[in-house]
Image (tube, rainbow, N blue to C red; front, side):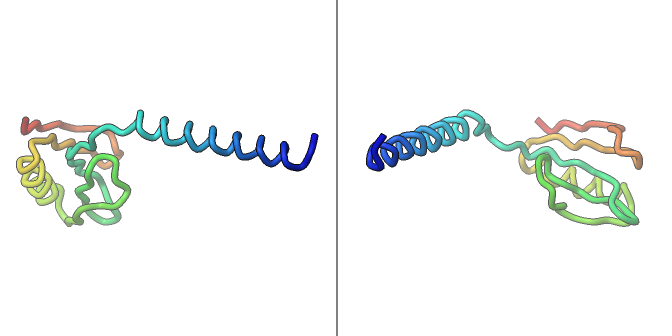
Length: 96
């Protein structure tokens, strides 16, 4: 095998990999939801959008966090998922 044919085969492989990557990323693109989760956070409660690692807001009381989550969910016609201190789901409120 010559050096030229080896480089061509590597280029073909690279092109195939890039095509597979872009096809798979397009297939998994689904619209993000606006569901709001009320979760335990440090010494209080936090509101976090579903799928996000970053929190939207921090609150001392769970009731305050729930009110904030309801405001956001109402605006985007989404759900509020309320968690217990152990992380399990306590309640779900829908604003469809």
